[in-house]
Image 1 (cartoon, rainbow, N blue to C red):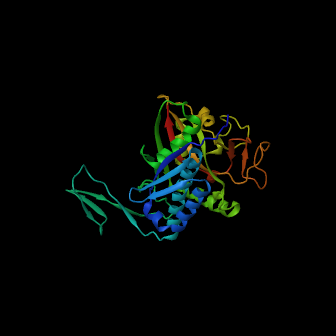
Image 2 (cartoon, one colour):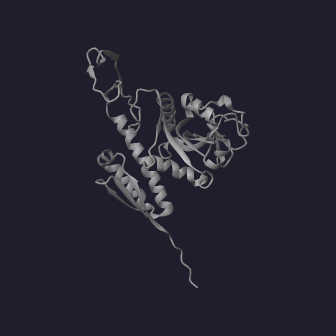
Image 3 (cartoon, rainbow, N blue to C red):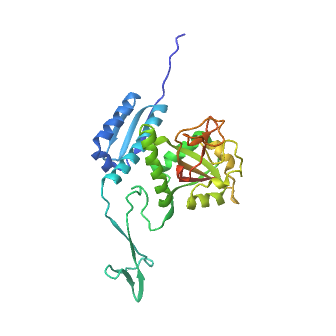
Length: 310
């Protein structure tokens, strides 16, 4: 009997979060079309409905979806760098739904007989455009369940964790501009050192931890001084994994049995072999040889998303 290799073709729909910027960047769209073409994927942009339709094999469409998500972020970052941002944000407080009067010369907010000072701040040119504008230096933004950003994080999490948890309670985007700037500085250095082709060796990796540690990481970043709590088999640094089910072992549940795991940007740089207890000259990271990576510099990693699940 003759056999045939059957390929399952599917349709994947992606949201155009920044359709205006995409329309203006014809070269990026052509580059993406070439990316899809080499993988036998049909890509159709529908700017009226803000949707991208991908037709191809299951594996190829996943690759194309990830590339499109990265493409949108790249266009946003380039747009920030190329344009001069002179927008001023005004922060004021309202009481219930009543009207208030703003005196911009005196920088005062008037509500009846009450007077409050108002503040203004300049938009940081390095802040990602998709971040929520806020006067807070640190913000935890709850992602909408139907957003592309939420679905992208969940799909990656489910590759190893599907069936191993009952409910994904929330996904939060961590907005800590101080930590993000530190990361960007090293990222620029790695882009120059290791090249643009692999995005300066940046990867998204997992880090599971107790809730108390998660709060400290959001405020201060990852801390190498905690090494030893769960062992230092592959070096005295901060441990990450590409396998969420492995990181889940270190995500201790709180009183509600909720676990916490970060999906973080990590700059791996030049990776040493599994026999290195700490990176030797010319290396940046040590590894188990498979899915575990150990970082030694605070600015190597940024805790971008926090997943809470039971």
